[in-house]
Image (cartoon, rainbow, N blue to C red; front, side):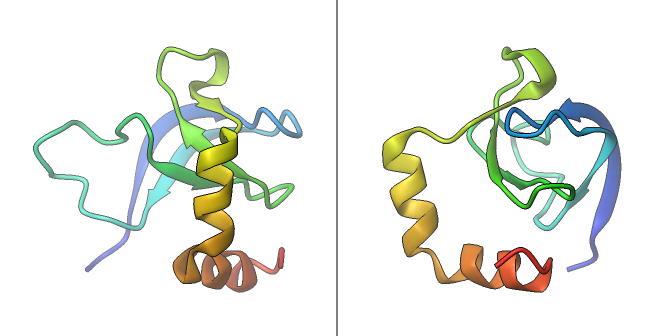
Length: 87
C-alpha cells in the first residue's frame, strides 16, 4: 500500500510539537474520513504515541490507560517506534 501525506494540522499533547500534515500508513479511502477518531499517531518530535481526537485541542490526545497497555503489547507499535528511532 502506498503511503500518503494529507494536510491535517495537529499538536502533540506530550511535547507541543505542531505539524501541518500526517503520513497515513493505512488506507485513507475507508468508509470514514481519514483520520478517524481513535487511530494512533506517533509524534515525529518526541516519539510518544497519541490518539486521534478531532474534538480535542490540537486534534490529538494522550492515550488512556487501556489504550496505552494495548500500544505496549502491540508488535506493530514497537516496530513503528523502533523504525522512527524512538524505541
